[in-house]
Image (cartoon, rainbow, N blue to C red; front, side):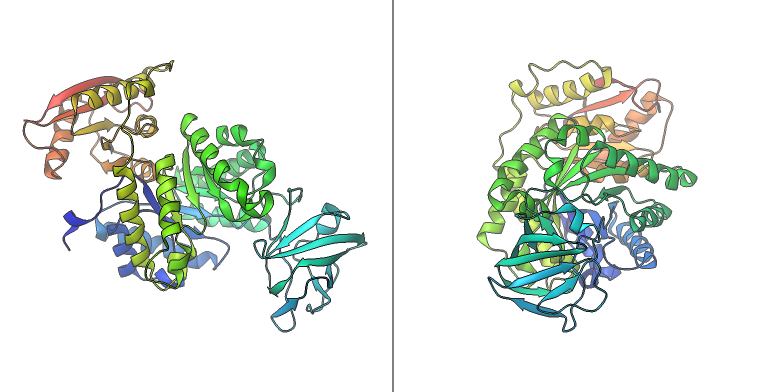
Length: 482
């Protein structure tokens, strides 16, 4: 395959695996076509399914010659209705319908049981309940014991295990369930690079999840990055604290839209992306980005605009869910998304001096990272190279749209994989050296071997002395390739 003709873009693509993308060959092709993060959705499948898929991803990445990050996405609380005798029912507007936490028999047109047993204690008369992503709306009339009596405001088909949201939020379900705790152990057994936590309401939820992950991963000497999925209305006022407790966030527009209303989501998306970048956290934009490609070979123009606008807002990554997990065109969807990302980035403004002014950097390594961006931008450098152990310097560089690719060279495989999510960062593995000059020579050899720079090209390089100390970046050098 001629990979030189593939789109080159800074924005990363997250692809979810599922029945439609469950072969080594297809996963390899998706990675070749610029998938940088593979999502394993723990809402479906067994522990062994995820272990097997993770092994397949690692092998596909090896064959493709590109390391990718694996993100384990926890299911979170099951805030869902139970099952129906016929698998589904049709609710007419104005009809009475009961959500009964004590019901053990299968549901019918009058009532259904609940997977979420605390619903009767979380709602009161007058509350609106939104089922099946808001396609069905119920008004609570009264709560009697374990039964929530409602009137159907917006009707339609309701099938087994559809989700329940309360408009305006207020459901008390904890972010981490017993299943999530077991799934964390599974994810750490194959050293998932990121763990996405569903429905966190505050920083405490994320701190608890991080602690559980670190304990489960301790025997492997591993520490995953923590991603908070922002999908509850309660998370919005706590966004800054959640960001501080996390390594990144996911703009999970599905459940969030149901709770806050569709019209509020675009502005919240922009706010979340801006806050994440300002706080040096990564951000993933998700949900229905290329939804029509589940069944169609091309996206709608609205979907193209949606993906492009997320790129222009500065998101680190755009995510595919059912499109690659169960859709008819998983590889074609990745290819289309790659092209959209590339085209959107070409329309971006490059970094200006104002991007660096008015900022105070208390840390030497952060000041060096910003200095590299500023200098490389003004010199028209071909590349920025960061020799890194922890990945912090490339992360800081990725918070600015300098339009100069950042090549992050590290001796740590876990750092390389984690950096796969950082916008505009191309992580590469390089042998560790304690001698600075040897490391710099090898870095240039890496660039020349891959055709990134040629003799005479200018590039900027950062590193730390002594070599190999995490967080020790203290040197910036401008080089001309020999």
